[in-house]
Image 1 (cartoon, rainbow, N blue to C red):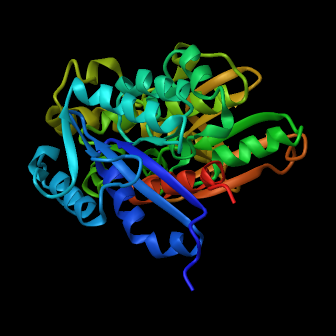
Image 2 (tube, rainbow, N blue to C red):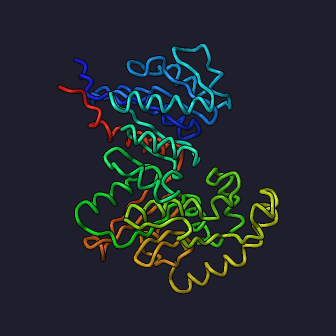
Image 3 (cartoon, one colour):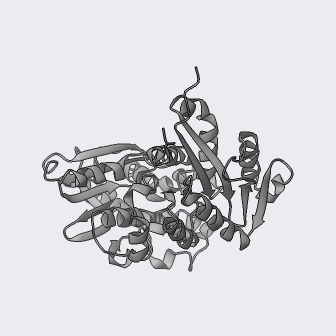
Length: 384
């Protein structure tokens, strides 16, 4: 006998990149699992950077799974949402009208059935949209770090109703870092320090250097494996780690901004994007960093330590950069592209809570986003 539907979660997705597409595929493939749990996720709208695809009647229907599958295929091929015209019962709106239509859906559903606005984009442009959604009583789920790492006032606004926001995937993809920190805080156990290797790219690079490989060689290998951004300096500059650190620091109650974080870049400004193209950096710039990095790795090894690129949040502030750590520590044992986070508190002072696992990848991140959506289901329960 079919399980009665207890919760229906209408969803509008912002962002059809790798994470957004994987999320839609996960939603479709998990229909039987969610049905057995009495939960239905109804995708009522999907937006990319230029337009919005929205169901004809957001109250009673969503975009069907066949359309969502075609949408993923079209976006993977680089086609716009408009290429799907004529394939279902929906409406297409282009910017700037698309934004107002998202607000219309938030207004209509936010105070009736409810709405989950999911941000899988990579832009600051969604901040005002997210704040409007909060005002209309909507839930928000974020994989996009930027809304939480801009002005502190924006962060406060977005997390003002903590029951209605989830952002686990902004820090560790599918790893339960945010949930662990919030549970410890809720228990009355103050978190004193967090140390984490939160970049799969830099975790891989630093662990490979232990084997005597050259920095330039390892970075190029990481790029060929798809671990880095198209321009590896986007990873080597440390700003992605800094954004994750800022989210964690703010979660601990620190009213700071990016300007308050000391970030160590692994390349000097004279090798930056304003001075060298990506190709020139890979061909002639990277090799200039080999000697300095080799000396630091050897110096750490002589002291029985290894180098890791970490964020450290504590009483003295927030730092991001290279740090010598004991070889036998959780971070020192790190190999490959896994993430590792150590959380210290009164209860976890001498033996920290350690969270380790895959912390990057579109599939893993999308799974974390879906888990966050499902975590909101109790807010959408139908009255008995």
